[in-house]
Amino acid sequence: MSWAYVILGLLLLILIHELGHFVVARLVGAKATRFLVGFPPVAISFTRGETEYGLGAIPLGGYVRIVGMNRPQSEDVIVCQDALEEIQLRRPEGQRDIFGPAVAQLKGAIVLDADGQATADRALRALDADQDLLHPKTYKETKKNLTRLRDDLDQRAYWRLAVWRRIAIILAGPGANVIAAIAIFTVFFWHGIPLEKPTTNVANVSGKPAAAAGLQSGDRILSVNGTNVSGDWQKVSEQVQGTKGGPITLTVRRGDTTKTLTPVRPESVDGRWLLGFTFQQVSDGVQREPLLSAVGSAFRWSWIVTRESLVGLTKIFTTEDGHNQVSSIVGITAASQQSVKQGSFLWTLGVVSLALAIFNLLPFLPLDGGHVVVALAEKLRRGKPLSRVVIERVSIVGIALVLMLFVIGLNNDISRFTGP
Image 1 (cartoon, rainbow, N blue to C red):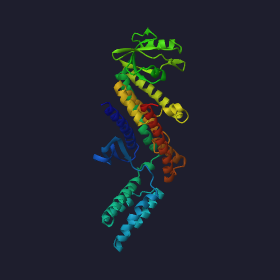
Image 2: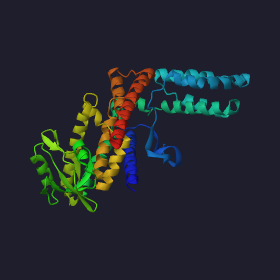
Image 3: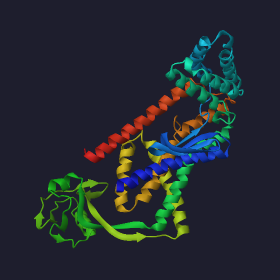
Image 4: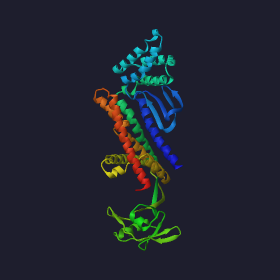
C-alpha cells in the first residue's frame, strides 16, 4: 500500500507542475487548447471554450498543450507541400489553382509574421474535400501537419507573446512545485513531526569491524567489554569511544541465545571510533507546531533544502561525494516508500517537489530553464528568433546531460541496493 501512496504523490507533483503552466498561460493570454490529467491518448474529455479538458489513458501526471511553443518556419509548409501538389495534379484542370497559392501564402505568412490562419484553413478545407485523392495515411499525416501549422500561426501563439509573458508561463511550472512544497511542509509541521529514539538493537551492519565480529541485524547488545549497557544506546557509544581504538568485545542477545562475539578494533572516522552498524529506531510520539509557526518552518526549511540542493548541484561534476549523491527516480521512489513507513512521507514529498522545481530550472532544453534562456536570447537579438536547427542541436545537448544525470543516479541507486 505504501507504494501506491508514493506513486500517487509523485504523479500529483507532476500534475501540479503542468497545472502551473496552464493557469498562467491562460492568465497572460496564451492559447491553451488541451489540459489532461494523465498523458495522451485521451480516454475521456469535454471542451469548454477553446480548451479540451480530460483524462489521459497514460496515468503519468498531467499534460498541457500551449499553441505555438515552436515558431513556424518555411520547412513546416514543405512537409505538407507534396501531398497538396499531388491533389492539385489529380484535380480537373480548371480546379488546380487552390493549393499553389496556398503554399506560397503560408510561406509568406511565416516569413512576414503575418496571419496565415485563414490560408491554412482554406487548405485544410480543400484537403478534406479531396481526401479521396490521397492515400489515407498521407491524408492523415498532411492534415495533422496543416492543423499544427494553422494553430502555430495563431495570434495568441506562445512564440508571438512578449518575452515576459513567455517567461512567466515557463516559470509557473517550477513555481507551482515550490508553492506545493511550502504547503506540504506546512501540513507536515502542523500535523506533527514523527519522533524516534534509538534502541540497543542492531538495524544493519555496514562496516568491516562489526562484520568481522559477527554482528547481525536484529542482535540486541547487552554489554561492551563486559560492561552492562542496560538497554541504553548512549552507553554503547560511550564504551566504544572509551577504548580509544582498543579491542572491543560485544555480548548480544540473538533470538533465544546470548552470544559473545569475536573481539575487534574499531575504525577511526573523523575523530570517532566506529564499528560500523546502526541502531534500530522506535516511535517516540510526534512534535506538533501551531499553524503560523508551521508556516514559518515551511518557508525556512524550503530555503534550506533549496540552498543545499544548489550546493549539491555544483558538486556533482567536481567532487566524488557530489557525484555519489545523485539519485534517479528509482532511488527517490524507494526513499519515499521508506518514509511512508516512518511517518515522514509528507517531508519527503515536499523535498521531491522542490527537487522537481530546481531540476526543471536547469538552463538546458527541453527543460523549463532552457526555454527561459531561449526567450532571453531572442530578446537580446531584438526579437530575431533562433533557428530551429540551433534549438534542436541545443536540445540534443540538454537531453544528453539529463540522460547522463539519470544514468549516474541509477548507478548510485543500484549500488545502494546491492552493496559494493
